[in-house]
Image 1 (cartoon, rainbow, N blue to C red):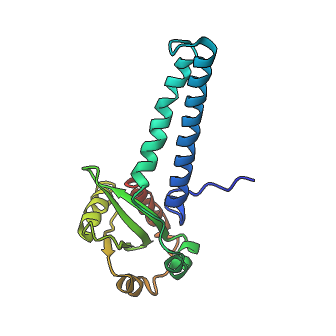
Image 2: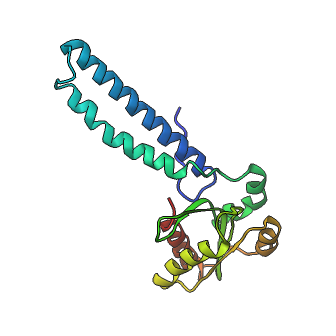
Length: 190
C-alpha cells in the first residue's frame, strides 16, 4: 500500500521528500553496483557494454541526491505547532514546510505561512536568516506578479499566533487573489 504524495506547501512535505529522494538515490546506487559487478563477473573487465547503463544511472542518481541535499538541513515543523494552525489548513489558507530560495540561491526555511485576503503572514524560527530576507524574496515575487499583497515574517511563535488569531477564510471575491498569492509563494520554494 503506497502512501499518497504530499504536495509542496503541505505539512510533512520536507520529511517525506527527503526520505523519497534518499531512497531513490540508494536504489540507483544499488543498480549501478549490481550492473558494474555483473559486467565485471561476466566479461572479467571493466570495459564492457553492461557498464554503459551503469554509468548512465549516475545521472539520475546525482539528480536525486542533489534534491535530497537541498532539503537535508531542514525539517518539518513540530506536530504541536501544526496542531495550533491546523484550522487554517482546513480553510485552505495555510502553507507549511517552505524552503524559500532567493535569487542568489540561498535557502531559507519558513515553517508556516498563512495567506489571507490582505497578505501573507509567516513563521520562521531560523536564526541564520533575518525575517526581512524571506520577506524581500516573496514580496518581490508578489509585486512582479501584480498581486497587491505583502509578506510579514515573525521569528517568535507567540507573535505569529497572536497575529493570525482571528483571521477569516477568504470570501469569494478574494479567493482568487489568495490562490494566486499561494502559487507565488510556492514558486519560490524547493
